[in-house]
Amino acid sequence: MEKGLAPGRHSLQMSQSHWEIERPKRDSLPFSTGCKPQSIGEKMSEHPVRMAMVGLGFGAEFIPIYQAHPDAEVVAVCRRNEAAMNELADEFGIVGRYTQFEKVLADPNVDGVHINSPIGDHAWMSLQALDAGKHVMCTVPMATTIDECRQIVEKVRQTGLQYMMAETVVYSREFLFIKHLYDQGELGKIQHLAASHPQDMDGWPEYWQRMIPMHYATHVVSPCLGLVDGLAEYVSCFGSGTVREEIAEKSGNRFAVETCHIKIKDSDLVAHIWRFLYDVARQYRESFDVYGTKQSFEWTLIENEPHVLHTAKKPEHEIPTRIEVPDFAELLPEPIRRFTLPQEIHDAEHLSFVQGGGHGGSHPHLVHEFVSAIRQGRAPRPNAVTAANWTCVGICAHQSAVQGGQIVHLPDFTLQR
Image (cartoon, rainbow, N blue to C red; front, side):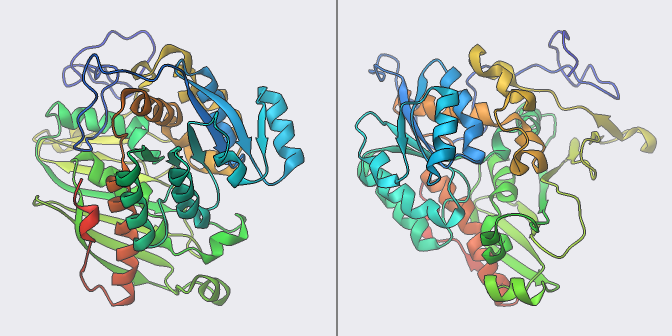
């Protein structure tokens, strides 16, 4: 959206390059967890949420956001490389410095941990943190096995602590824009959802060679389910093509591409998602397409080109319109609004940030949701059950692919939010 435009009904004001829309209210959330927010008058936390950042590669991007948030602060950092950790801690004036995760958990000044470790560490770190009485924000995915997801869900229920999976897509400006159109009735009845996440992982850390494509699928699962506030009931997935022998041996997966259909519980909707990590020629893309009876949104095929909105019942050449998706920084507290822009991020050159197109300005929204949930005594969005459902879609999808597309049902604990 061009700066300075007065808000109005977007369906009445449209051009090739910008929209004028009636914006959602501040603090509105992109989807529900089924949990009621704290009632007015209930006691809030009396001090800022005191965070420890665990993993300081990608994780460093979040430090200045927490520090600028009016209800949070970073009191500790944790990284195995002590020299690199001290350099970053000096830069941000952080006193608590640890090379061992266990010592972070023993720090009584830490209320919550933000875990940005390699994927294989997500589950055990989350479980240990919850056992230690710490709230948890963890980057995606929640875990790599169904049992680990179940353990985290059960631990959250036992402890009463907050767990949030830091899924960027459902706080990106594109998702917030589409969700707003849907909530306002502009898309009509949703008829189909689709998402893709192609990414060439050559050049990334070696542990990615042991990753199965669908085990890292939340970036495509989450927008499809989050838009309609749905949960996956069962999946059917096929593998296609083959990766080179080196990757197949390390990962235990021979498929180059995994493509999955998701049946959304208690609805007539099916979503289609696909993933690959190696040996397919394609520019990075985290896409999300939505097809409705009135309007449909299609993600651009090429990065940094306009997305397309299709409007029904127009002359054929007028159906598609190229659009620029507006930012939604005004949903945030003023001190962190600037962080929706890549140039305000500490490590904007980190490969995850570059290939992800800045993750759609999602980082300050994630921080604000997590901090607000802790302060207000409510479950964050996505909470543990929703995160488990989104994560288990990919795990079940790979099981289906190995079995030639056989239907695999999501475990019951992911359907009871």
